[in-house]
Image 1 (cartoon, one colour):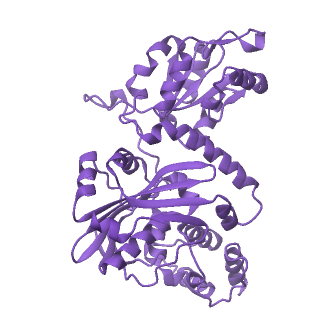
Image 2 (cartoon, rainbow over the protein chains, first blue to last red; image 1 turned 30 degrees about the vertical axis):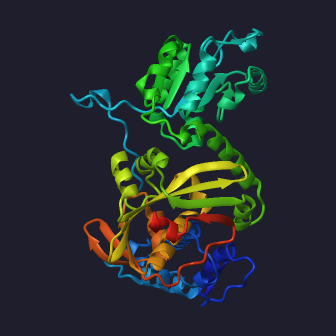
Image 3 (spheres, one colour; image 1 turned 120 degrees about the horizontal axis):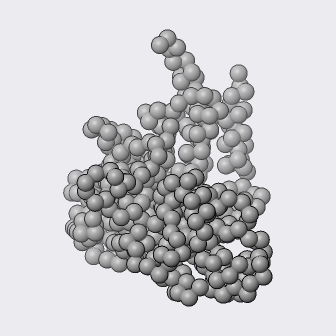
Length: 83
Length: 367
């Protein structure tokens, strides 16, 4: 269950090395998040969890913390599977 | 699913004369093409008359050059160094493999499409082998050598300051990439080790050719893909209600040249970023965000609202991510054009891994 958060934390730890990230911590408040990190994060979430991030999902609030990313994946995977 | 970049029109495409294709790389055979004689047979090869001048002419035009030769690597490179021309060639492919795969390797290393490559060889067999495997590559016989510099495909429309520097910029890139691959520490530390310096300011007249070139050549890191003629760009440059900004990047390996461009319409009620682009060559440098942040600080100094236009293609998602993660939110959509707004609160501070030289708000708006 928290395996997912561990994966996200491990990914982010590569960028925020010297800092132990809390699940609710705002990564954008920690310092400079450049476009490259942002793009890598989006690509990581898509590939690792097999979801597609739509333009509308590209909201700062969806990627602000480990919890926020986890919740986003929840919403994307809970989408009605009838179709 | 990525779409292939648009291919050049073929001569059979229609009655109209297609624009001449643009060759960005000339790939040379060595034996009996670049030099007279066959190195592996012990000839004391000498450079063919006219070739030295041609190498320099093409280099000044910003056309890159490489080698696809069947030889042993070491003696051939030593010969090129002895002749004083080794530095002209990027990613020389000197081996006993098929020349088509050499040409492919060069194109992929330079990140260019095959239709931007020309290949010259004296051997009909080699020309045919490349033509057969890589039909998009333009092929020359050595007999065409003397007319080469006059060919439209090898005559760029504009020669800019960047053109003559292009080969050195690629060579510096090769060295950077090697360092990056062998760099054990984290990415931020690598970026810091480059000692980058980013300068942003108003475009000058002499920047316009390069600005136009950037609008035409840049697809991935481009927010709207708008292209403008030189005249239009010059009008924006001198216009009261537009800012045309240019970014230059340097590091300890040399210059990247002018790698960023932004056009901001500075209306009385709000500012609109019509275009923001960065050359793909600096994709891994994290500087796109810096140009965006600079515009945010200018708009805040002006006390105005700031919106940005964004036109989604299948290749420019990184710029949408740049905007969205930089704090922009979509407020309107007109067809495929999105309007994003930034409230100008919470502008991220500039990072410390790059030295900045930013033209001041007063200087930009005053002149």
